[in-house]
Amino acid sequence: MNTIGTMLRLTIFGSSHGPGIGCVLDGVPAGIDVDRDDIQRELELRKPSGALGTPRAEEDRVEILAGVVDGKSTGAPVVLFIANKDTDSSRYEKFRAMPRPGHADLTALRKYGETVDLRGGGQFSGRMTAPLVAAGAIAKEMLRGLNVQIAAYTQRLGSVVDDQERTFKEVRRQARENPVRSADPTLALDMIHEIMEAKHEGDSVGGVVRCLVVGLPMGVGEPFFDSLEGEVAKMMFSIPGVKGIEFGAGFKAASMRGSEHNDSFQVVDGEVSTITNNAGGVLGGLSNGMPLDIKVAFKPTASIAREQRTVDLDRMEDTTIKVEGRHDPCIVPRAVVVVEAATALVLADLCLRGDFIA
Image 1: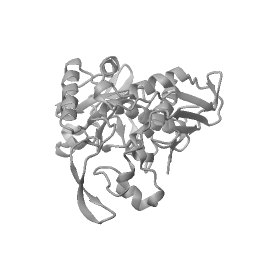
Image 2 (image 1 turned 30 degrees about the vertical axis):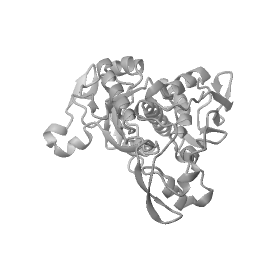
Image 3 (image 1 turned 90 degrees about the horizontal axis):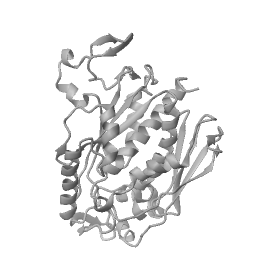
């Protein structure tokens, strides 16, 4: 299905090389500020940055088709549309017979048959994250009324790792000041080098986006099966290229003792908090008032210029393929704002369900 959410329901539509892409965001309360310029600023952060990204140059100008009058949501579904203006489908037909390693060509053909749209990846393309970012801008505005703020950054890019504990203010201040969305200007240069080296070799690199949320009230989430972690994880795995997610200490918790992992409680300024945040802001599937701390792992871009082994489905024999076209050597910097948007949409939905948003 192309719809997610319970009280705030997001439906995306379109495809990478069709006339356009967009979304319907249903459940936005009446009276929410919806500024097209704010949405556009978020979309700008998703655009490729020079030699670090794809040469495909989409304007990504968002149109608000319904649900907003005079800058305010009406309570009706908000409909957003983004036209595709720089498409080149000339290289994609051969992938029906020779599926690209790491792509959904083969699985999509098996599920949908010969009518499936493989141009630019079709409905499986990372381009489908543009309407997600646009909808996420509205969700961020909904959360702003609760003083909930979200900021993400590139924690790892290939072999370059930011192992420093970053504050929310530091991430908010630094991550949007460089093209790789690093919270450290020096590491940003190393990350840029990592991307350019992979590109020069006809290869690609992956990485990790870390997302921090502050101001989230205690008790957000709907256990058992709609836990805060579960809902966030489901949304993150809808983003093309995501292969893993952690909350707080994550997989490191498996090697810790309980005495190390347990976050001891304390009273600060009349409020209960924890001394550490190994739980990542979640206990029992509910937010615990501490910063929500999420790490999302992205695989290297599947489309690479190197020769790879594949199969010829017409002849049913092994062959090789080189993927030509316009592709990002690393999707991680562009994915930072996507992770923020995905997080905002889940939190806004859960806050509506829990009556935190009227």
